[in-house]
Image (cartoon, rainbow over all chains, first blue to last red; front, side, top):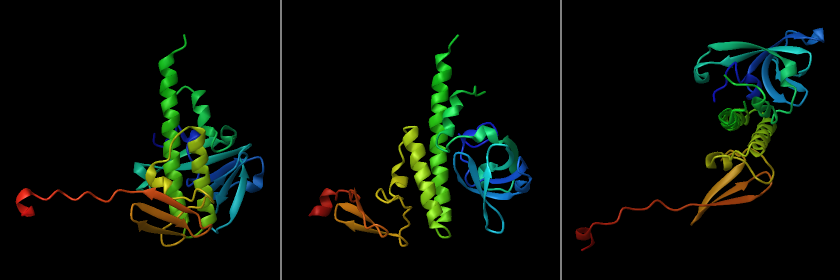
Length: 103
Length: 118
């Protein structure tokens, strides 16, 4: 099942391009870069100047760029995600797929 | 009314997503290895966790790409050594020295025709 806007919150976030568009901590706003790691409460984002920033999932809103056409092109789909939906250990996130009715 | 088919359908979706995540993580580990090998080891460990949690087996071509003892991502010519020793292939991790052996069967040669034997 390919990554899409419908299954993004169960899928692999590592490797996706993201930006923080809103956060309870205003200093974290406008962080942009590639997701390189994930813990239960944090996303680790590598910015363009090769800094690793830890962004808490709770209270933040992320804009993920999903590559289309199998990742071969630069065309991306942009998905806005409430960080509270991602609050789980990365390997446990798929489990929630059963609670949500897939259509 | 509880619909059983709905449950089964979702169960397959879970394994599909898990398999795709594992393959994606190994791709990322391959891409990151030259610049940040610690990060690629972390991706492999996450891929194994996903596989264990949802009972998804790693395919054989991915199984030989990490060390089962120290968990590092193996790249031939960089941090592992691959030798063919008769009936098995030996993969040595140069980080911890662990040797993993996989049996292989040499390619079968076509049987000679009857008139060629004379």
